[in-house]
Length: 347
Image (cartoon, rainbow, N blue to C red; front, side, top):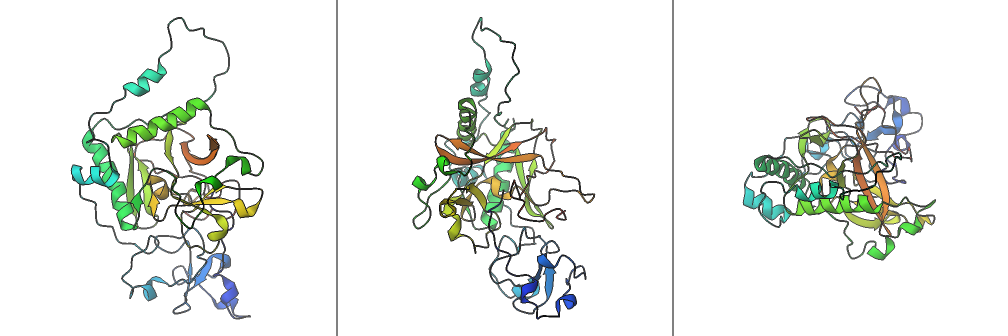
């Protein structure tokens, strides 16, 4: 479900006519997959986007420099950082301040979840097929474990130059909140049921008081930052909401952001919106959407990315689409229904 019209400019089009066959990837030596073979603006050497470490989800729209040419620059970027990042201090006060927790993390207050599950005495049970409902995440019981989970996200956000936000944000010069209208969605947008809205809001409240989702952000030399389950997660559990700055798609068509997400696909393209998590974001930014196949070609995605109408506004949720074991990495389909990018070889 990445932005629908990202441009693939740096391809064989920059190679002189008749010389295409001579362009080969410096990493694998192959000239195949030419549409994903980039040419460095500094030395003209080629590299596949899937041979880079960490890999890129798509061909950048602007100038691109290979790791050798870029080594002279001291400015780190999310796509160029291959070394293990400096860990955020595992200090409770620093972590609480970083995420603006309302109080210091303590034992999970799960009574709110349990209260919602109770049925009134004498309730009539109707024999009907049960509707599948979204579930709130189940925080780790150990407060120290939750601190480590938060510290892992703080490490990734700090390394990529972003600040934590758990809401869609509307910045001056970008799309205003009034532009986020689910009624503009081409073909209509499914409405999130009231009970599921309550579950989503419960997840937000738990996070505000330090009851964190059982997730760890880890750094992989191939995938870059990625997210792992830190305890068993049940099917249909809300993992997180995809958040960041909201902007019009037309303003981002040449943007090199590697994590943009479709928010509104309007009948009028000028009204289409994307979420840009490069400056303000949560853990959703680091959930991988491209390395979602095994070397044998089988899908390994365990999340679905769904856009909902919530009180008239568009929202994007990442939800478990099967049971997820502890230690399992989280993946969703980067293409969604658009099939915009050939990601079958990203492993």
